Image (cartoon, one colour):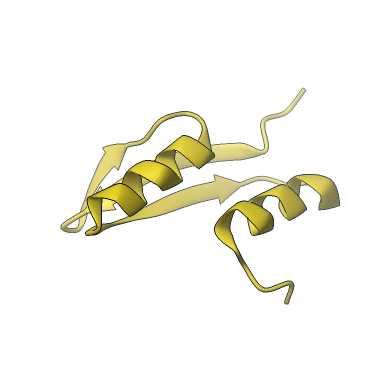
Length: 62
């Protein structure tokens, strides 16, 4: 089964740090630090998988 999330990292002060494998945990870590952002790389997500990501991040449907 191919992986949908192919990359997940937290950036602080312009430097990449590896985040947890679970993007929900990584998002919590980035938000808790207050000075970081989360990068995730997706590869061909299904509609259901993409809905999970948009829901978790609070993204607009467009």
